[in-house]
Image (tube, rainbow, N blue to C red; front, top):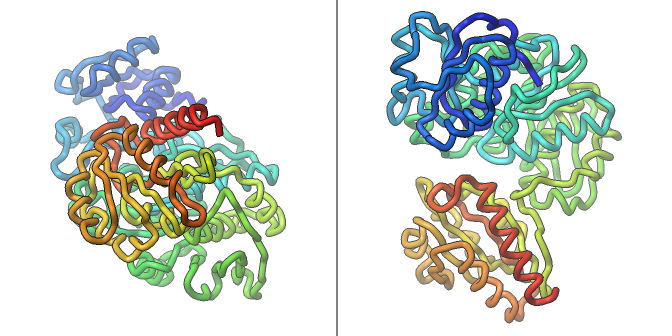
Length: 464
């Protein structure tokens, strides 16, 4: 774990005591800083008290000695600009304190190591985990963290030939200033988090920040299958000193990496190579071909041989809550895709199956599930939960049979009963909510774990 000794004897502020905030408090405290910390959640504050870090003061930010505080470590979930800056952000700006996140501090502490950054609206967690798996399988020392759920400051200190593989959200990118990614990957951009960035332009600008500090010798990997990313690709090709590699599932990526079915086409060395990847049960769906192609390009740029990459891809175990097969009961597969917090992500899972009993709903995003109407023919029955229930019922009316279930337990019971008596081929109960989880759960992980618990209980009950 990192100890931030550059702040020894200095006053530093931390606001937001989730995983990243707690990691920052620990690293700063162990490095000898005087830390002023706060979270608006009483439970989060109590957890910090239990940790018993030294030189940590727990009091509201209005009482902090702002005239002596040079940096504020802000948790990414705290509004920086929209819908309006959080009060702690305003206090920091008035005092001239620099506002940053734990990833920036990791870079400050260990700039000699290599940094790989991955962002995008969808697929970044899978791609991040896949890159880390390929590197470690190839004998390269690597650590994984960031938005994937591991505080950057809870990672091990790495030597100069080590690689930090960091998933970076748009919120975190807004809090990076000097961090330089030796390899930066942008998967895709579709509308999301508009409430926090003001509009699509603000969201796109946040995503572009992953390339800001790159220079000659670095590599930028960009998916070009959506218009927003194509524009960024063209812009960087004109201005950036880094090598630019295009990724596509739809067209030949000249000088880049593309996929067709179970084949990767590698054109990065100026001579097109065809590489068979075969069937990958833990990376199902066309969308995962983009993730694989991106991971391939990233790891090739880090010197990993193509053969080793393909070997590691085949042994990748997959990620929890991403089109994860939980069980097969009485011929019905139960799939946990709780990570699908918007319609675009849910689309990826829906396209993997033909006979779906769909559990959907939660805290709805702008646009709801209207973009999924072309795929409703794959849905046998929808089981609605959460705050989105009434809105989604209107979208489904006259197109797909649906049941208003309210909560996840009811939805699993109803979906399983319907799927068990279905006469169609390969029925699937799919939790792919197309919504945030915060109306009924702490996060998508908690929602996914609850689904797994319910399926396991069902499996035990029916003896399958």
